[in-house]
Image (cartoon, rainbow, N blue to C red; front, top):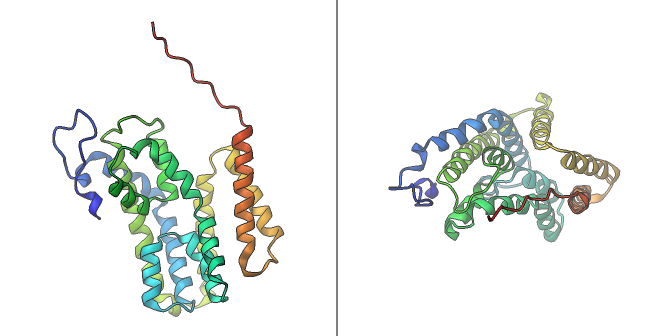
Amino acid sequence: MPALATIGPMSASNLAPQPLWRHPEFARGARDMTGTALGIGAWGLLTGIAMAKSELAMPLAVLMSLIVFAGSAQLAALPLLAGGAPLWIIWATALCVNLRFVIFSAGWRRYFAELPRRQRLRMSYFAADLNYVLFMKRFPQAEAPPTSESVPYFWGGVALNWTSWQLPSLIGLLVGDRIPPEWGLGFAGTLALLGLTYALLNDRSTWIAAVVAGAAAVATYALPLKLNILVAIAAAVAIGLVIDHTTPRAVQPEEDLT
């Protein structure tokens, strides 16, 4: 992981770079992620099993797991690939499923905009839902320039998150075709996914968007090629935009310049 080398000088208090993994915030970021690691691992195992039981060749499935690193997009694309859906539908589905990362990236930009572009590109690959939630709880206010604590905290969280996902996913790929369906791992993976989703529902807006998405997915379940997923995502994004534009924003007090 190239970005785990050193922390660059981001504040006047940084007299010398130090290895990221030795920074206290790196350990704190990893420690904060431990509570969700089991659920992420279950979800990764389910995704690996699903890919093993699909028609994807093993090398392609491993490459997909390592490069895509997006369980929801992988699970959404697999039935489309198996059903012979047009390529544009597969791409559109993966794009819509991952649109939430545009919002996450916009939030992280307040903290990391001054970092070199190459470093930000590396960070974007490892970005994940729960890392964003935990990061914003740890650093509710962005500072300019960014503090020397935010970057190691980010890498500590994503390092554990990436490992918790990839290892079970690869195990699922290797043993998935040997696991009988009677074990019900699909249902266990669904429960894990529901648990992860519940952790993201932290206010009225997200709850409304989740309920609308669920209702839309059920109402359009009969659509072919799993297009009800696209409908649900579009409905959630639409209601989220409506809530965002109609919710009054708190007025920041003007600074006293006297």
